[in-house]
Image: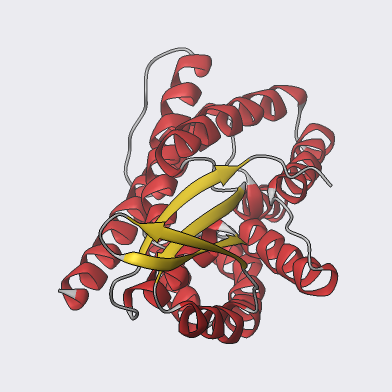
Length: 277
């Protein structure tokens, strides 16, 4: 069962990466818009230097893949690498296809942004990633959380990174490309948020268990996180403990894996947009 789920997650990541590369190569770029994040940086470099886009994506994203392996673990990195390779191959393939969407730039970019967002949502929901800015934000947030003991959202880092991308587009390309690219970001992130429940926000995991010590130890060892412990009582199960832990979206797959190894444990996940300090 686990092997089937793992295989399905890779299939969906591949499909999402194909959707993303299709949207970028055949809809966004021909209509003077670019992707956001590190893919946007790669497109800017390609436009300024004339280098092949897929190679630019490789050069820009490779350092983030390596950093992801060091700080976020092998499992995440493998899925990110698979998605990125498929995305690069897709760009190379779709760029050679003669295709033109005969409609207004605004409509084409909105449509392309929706397809891009759907593809990225598929990738994120299955534990993958094809944007180095998300890896960078996750590493920074993880380091800050480990150092201060507080939980931080990915949103400020992602907004700051993409703001720099669009300012660069505005300065080195033109204002129209920057505005169309901003529309891509708005549409794509709206689709992603709809299907991933605000992936950039903090996630609260509530665990009801009769083995609190084992789960707490695993969470500490594998995620370097701590938990709030509350006594609770079930109508049938009797005495148990309720654990509350705050993590990032990218840590959810590992958290689910930890919980699944402790039989009789039940968990829920909710989104925390803001924590008052």
